Image (cartoon, rainbow, N blue to C red; front, side, top):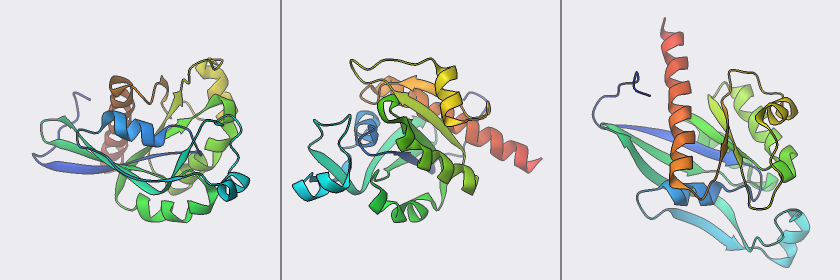
Length: 191
């Protein structure tokens, strides 16, 4: 990111997206320098019949609107993070959340990889720059990135990284990668 320069006080909007239970709330909380705003509610018997808990049986809460956090990346650059809800019934909010966003981090869980297809498609269709972070959950088989790239049908221009959404350094690496991609895209478009 050394080549990117920002005017003092530049603030940009970043989305953290992906399927239900993939770690979006966790990532926003891990990296935010302010106490994150969370709109989590308990998973009820009724909602567990709508949202599959397969692979995330321990999950007790779910985001019903958005998560919000803030992180200062460097001199003059502040990222405002908006975690999207993962459940299909709340996807109508994604269009509104995307307005004015620099780009998105799409989190993927290899136990339920198909759950991130909708997020990848959403950002590809709208031309929103994004990176994919494969969240490495404890005790889950790791796949090499070439296998994940093929399964998600990602072009080589989309950065794909392993990450741990609980770890601040790992989350910052994803955000930094996204800023690099977005700035490179904006620079190329300006030429």
